Each structure stands twice: as structure tokens, then as C-alpha cells.
Length: 351
Image (cartoon, rainbow, N blue to C red):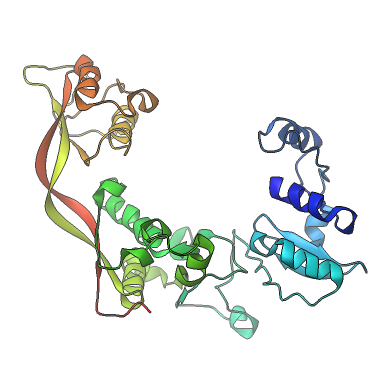
């Protein structure tokens, strides 16, 4: 919204930007008044309006309808097309080649880039992987379901690293573990194509995105739905120039264990429990601002976490152990054979 305000100020009476929301008046007014980015801008907004949404249906926001002086609808776009140059051309009457936004129903999306007669048939299996930013698409990650079973996924305008890590999270969950960036091994000679954050910064992020964002859509029969993540991984590995896979390797880590000689009622020797307290403790300890290595739980702790994430960020290990000591736990650096997610180069050229 601040960007819209700047554009309105820049073009003055030659441009009218009218925000619209279906939210009730009170909710919208509170947002405009209290949001740190909005207060002080004194922008007007149409509120509690469902009729305009019917006239301009959309599955995601922001959603910009461009009206000319006619007035007639000249284009529907996302944020990427809302530039001073495009607006100036539209005001002067010049032809503007705008990338139209695809209207995706997030609750029941059609297969990506398919239309016409194919949409009237029963789609049994479908897979598509596209390299390069698609300006008409928002950034989406949608699970497709049939009879309550996830049998497809759509992922649009993401870098490869995000796509690989999204699959890794589900693979780790399937073996009863929680993925974090500490379980990632990037063993590639060209990491700069995986994520802009790994690039050398020689090009602007917008330029990098045009060539290095990906989109995929995949639908499989219900009988193979259990293999969906493996099929997504096979598709990425077969076409991207990289190979992402789960590996087991001896890795330095922190082990959460019961302090010698201590036995408490909240430590269950029958096995590592999955309780709110244990999950909260492991989430805090595995946060990248808390520990530098992966943390594994060998404590069988099932009590109330003695650690609040916001209070342990940046603390040294001995200070963290002082807090753990109250419930008879300690964090020690050791080595364990554990699951890691490795991304390596393969023989398929990336470009």
C-alpha cells in the first residue's frame, strides 16, 4: 500500500488508485489506522464490498484491475506490472504489453497452463515443470486432494532451493524427524542457481528471478499418491541440473540428554515422547539463532519446556545448559549418524 500511495502522489490527477476489500468497515478502518505501514498515508478504501469481487474474480491478492478512460477493463495484473513506466504509457495511450495475471482458484485449481477441452476430461496423471519466472502467476504452494487424499501439488515461482527444502520437510516428517536448514548439505559447484541468497550478487534479484524461478504442477492416480514426494523429487532431479536426496552420514550435533544421576517424573524412560513440551523445547533448541548444529533428543523429556525461544537467542551453550539444568537435562556436542538432505550437481546441464 505505501507503494500505491507513492504512485498516486507521482501521477496526481492523471491516476486514481482505489483499494477495495470485502472486510467489514470496522476491521478495515482499524487496519488503515493502526498498521505501521498504513497510518499517516490517509488512503481511502472501498470496504465491505462483495459486488466488485464478483465483477473481478480472483484467487489471490494483490489483484489489480486496470481501467482506461473509457472506462473499460484493459488488463488484470499482479504487483510486478505496477511500475511507473507502465502506468505512464497507459496514461498517454501508448500500447502496454502487460503480463496478465492468471486467476487460480486456490481451493480447486485447474491444472497449470491447461484449458479448453482437456479441462472437461478426467485427468488421471499430469506433470509439468517450467523454468523461468511467470509474471502472470502469484507465488503459490497448493496441495491437490481427491477423496481426502493429497494426490498432487502445485508450486509456482519459487527458487529451486525452496522447492527442494519443501520436499525435504515432508520426507523428514515421514521418518518421524523434523527438517531444519542445519540438516541441509549443499555440495554443488554452482549453488548460485539454487537461490538468489547463494548468488554472487552481480545481478539484481529481479533479473535473477526471471531466469531462475521455477513452477511445477503434478497430479498422480490415488494408488500412487504415497509416492508423490518421490515423484516430485525425481522430476526436479531429472530436469534441474541438481540432485537432491536424503542421505545418512556421521554428523556433528548437539545431543539433548538426561544429566547423569538425575531422574525426574517428567522424563519418560520408555521412549522419546511427542508432547507439546518436548516439541516446544526441540523447536527452540534447533532454531538457527540458538544453536549452530542440529539438535537430537535422547532425553525422553515430556514436561514443560524450561526454555523460551526469545530468551535464549544468542546465548552461549553454557548459559543454555544452566536453564536446562533445572529439569535435569544437558546439551552436549557429539557425533551421530543422522539423516541429512544433500543437494549435489548431476550430469544434466542447468542452462
